[in-house]
Length: 104
Image (cartoon, rainbow, N blue to C red):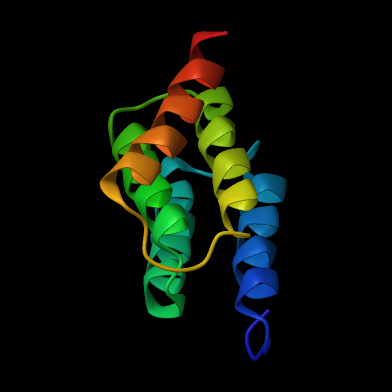
């Protein structure tokens, strides 16, 4: 994945790899994977992914189950198509989307 010229592909590649490892990964490995995604998103200017990754890190730290973590990863995967700065309202919309998915 490293050396990709397209940040969308690189971010999504990291997310896909973590999704694949999720069922058997230790919590610390999940946290490290999410942290790597958050840093890459920040460095690449993908605010939506960074906001979601930050919340996912909190969910991992709180001991949320893997199904909840998967919801965050799916939302980050979708958000990778939205580069650039986000308004507070847009960030709230992404988080509301995750909350809705978790409620179902």
